[in-house]
Image (cartoon, rainbow, N blue to C red; front, side, top):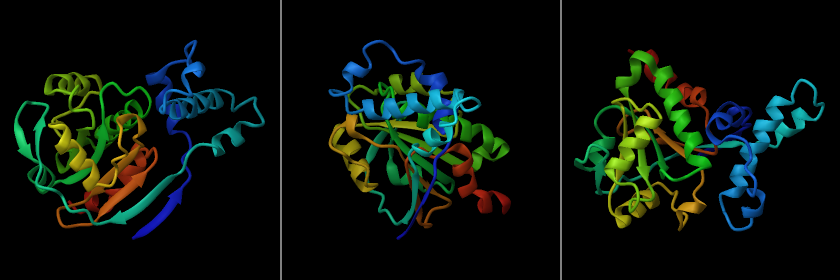
Length: 231
């Protein structure tokens, strides 16, 4: 397994401000009870430090406190799971991931207010950056809260982030959702404990690239550079 880290600078400043909004009264009081509060605070810090860069000599220090991304190359065995797409069709996960396209995969839940809006915004940006190559890359978002995230709820979420035909959302039973998370090493026991992870594969049979942390759309696009160049 190959692993290295890259400094993450600026994604939260660019995306979280439009999605999360300013800190609301009482947010700090909820930090001790909400496992997501740490991530929310990190995003808030990124938002404020970005606006103060010109006048704040400590702004660079704030940026350096942003989380890093860790890139690993791994082999995952795709389990024979039955999931339900946002269009209501029951499908098998291996069929969805082995249709010949490159894959970008993440795990989300629609009521998430910290991590998922950011990672979903990045998927939306990646979709736009792919342009005419959108049909060569399959964006996959699997719910970790299937009891709430019905196909109808996922369709509404997809519309919110401008998902095109190449970006699909999946739900199913709790057991199948957990099995999918475990297969890709992201299961953390509870949806409120999940962490930002993006998984990529350029083609069936190729190794998976795992990026822990908040990857940017440009970073994800770079992973497909050689594939997209070989049209």
